[in-house]
Length: 108
Image (cartoon, rainbow, N blue to C red; front, top):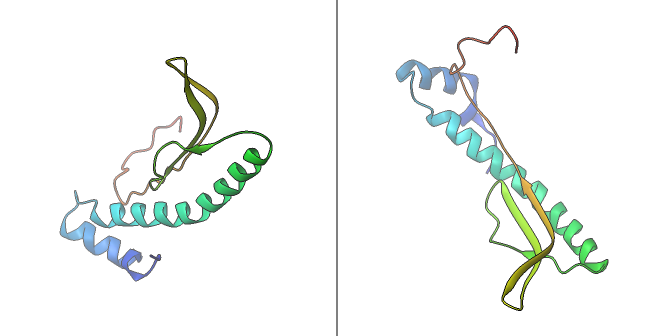
C-alpha cells in the first residue's frame, strides 16, 4: 500500500467531474492513509505494552487490531465479576474529502 498517482489532484478532479457526489477516491485515500498509519503506530503501541507488562501489568489484546483501533486490557473474571485494572486503547481517525465542504462557518 502506498500513496501514489491514484490520489493525484487530477484523479480527484476527474472523479469529481464525472460524479460530484461520489466519494470513491476520497474513501480509497482515507483507507490507505489509515492502513499506513496503523503500520507505524501498532509497533510503537506494542513496545509500550511490552514495557508496561515488564512493570507488572498483564496487558493482552482485547480484540484483534483493526485499522484505526487497537486495544489492550489487563482484565480477568474474579468471583463471577469482571475486573479491568488497566486499559490502553489507541484510536486513529483519518478524514478525507474533496469538494465536499462548500461553506465554512465564520466562527470556524
